[in-house]
Image (cartoon, rainbow over all chains, first blue to last red; front, side):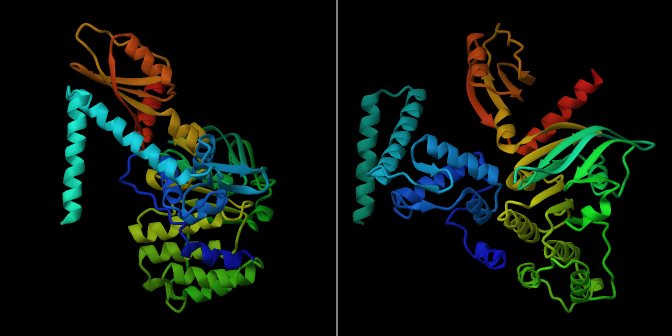
Amino acid sequence: MLDTEYTEYTQMHGGLTLSQSDKRPMYLQIMEQIKMQITVGDWKEGQPIPSIRQLAVDIGVSVITVKRAYQELEREGIIVTQQGKGSHVSTIPGLGASLREQELQQHLENAMRVAAQLGMRPKEVEKRLRDAGERLAEKETV
Amino acid sequence: MNGLAAELNAVSKRYRYFLLDKVSLKLPEGQIMGLIGANGAGKSTTIRILMGLVHQDSGEVRVLGHRMPAGQIAAKRDIGFASEDMRLYDSMTLGWHMNFIRSIYPAWDAAYAQALLKRFSLCADQKIKGLSHGQRVKSTLLLVLARKPKLLVLDEPTTGLDPVARHEILRELTNVMADENRTILFSSHNTQDVEQISDVITFIDRGRIIDSMDKEIYLDRWRRLRLEVPLGTQLPALPGVIDVQQQGRLAVATANAFVPDLANAYENSGARVQCIQNMTLEEIFVANVEHSREEVEA
């Protein structure tokens, strides 16, 4: 039985790839990519996801690293693991959208942090944000 | 499951210029252990003792339930061992070797062997003497993998390989882990390989085990803190910090037992923590070896 599985594994990468130039630990990269799969709707709410061992084989990293990523995702409520039944994407309605929301929140906080370092007031940041929006809109109409 | 595939208990071996000093190790079934150390640290000696190829002066070695070296004949049925000094017959083809190993080991999986030939881009009809270094390494590994041994022991499997060959081999090793009853021990000084595929990391330096633990926990404990130190501020000596380098107002502290409180303690002393960085296994390797040598010399 294992023989046929061996050939399947190499063809399937679970859609996840790790980057060596990404300085963050591998488990964080895995978490981020799983969130991305959920955000774009490839992994749907309640959908079963690969077992830890399976995903480790698919992406070619150690079991312990994927386990760590799953544990952290579970702590964040993004996936649910049931003993003996494996893991699935959490059934929270609108999970994909809320992950995107979180991402936006993070970008905004980062922007505010840099702005504070530059000594910029919130009003100025607001203006810069509007400008950026306008520039983007112009680009899209071209 | 959850048993130990191999265990070393206070194993010592003295050579004229080298001492393997009371090495203790536990290798849990279903995991990949990466053994790292500089050249001459004792990786190969440890592996050879584990295989029963070298007899320890003292200490106990147990592999797949067999006492070593006494039980090595029984143990070797289920161990696949590959090292660089393993010789294949130059004038014979890879296919000849495959048939030969197949005749000895009933567990040989012919379909898997064919799949490996393809994945490693090898040709069974080619004579060994015409193979490149990378092709030889991959051939040796194919012969070992297709036996589907419970325990794979690989001494420097990726040394001297080009990136493509290295990648093929690492991928094949992680494929083995689809079966949770199989175990891999491999040595390497390529920290990137070890970081990517091991569950457990064991550090060996100058014949002693410095650390052996869960990779995620291990990587998590090491951090580099970049500090801004105002003039007149004295950085406190904190537990878990093994090294502080300061030049002017900037300092870098390296911690091997990081906890968030460490950053608070620096802040409380008047310094500002600019950032807390994760470290790659390579950086940890160097810092750890330097630190443990300082300790030994102190």
